[in-house]
Length: 112
Image (tube, rainbow, N blue to C red; front, side):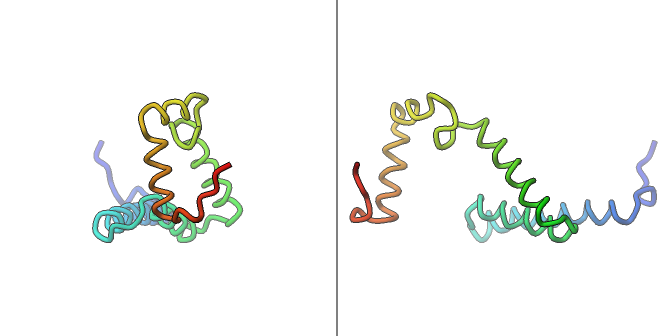
């Protein structure tokens, strides 16, 4: 059976078009303008939610659930029980520490 655009209602066509524009915008902002991918993803998902008319309380809950589920399944910021050990052994913890020290300055480092 051939797919016919006239079979799609206008609202669905709008949603598909909006999603396509946001994905293209996401790629352009990251690849061309070299913006931070996390911030770009946050802003483009927020823009898509606003354009499609999603209520703000739903936007916050949806973003929280999506980011929470993603971080739950990755080795990010100690999400797994042995993630700290893995980071220490691989040198990742040192890299993170040196990057933060370089960014914030040595005088802002508080050693316990």
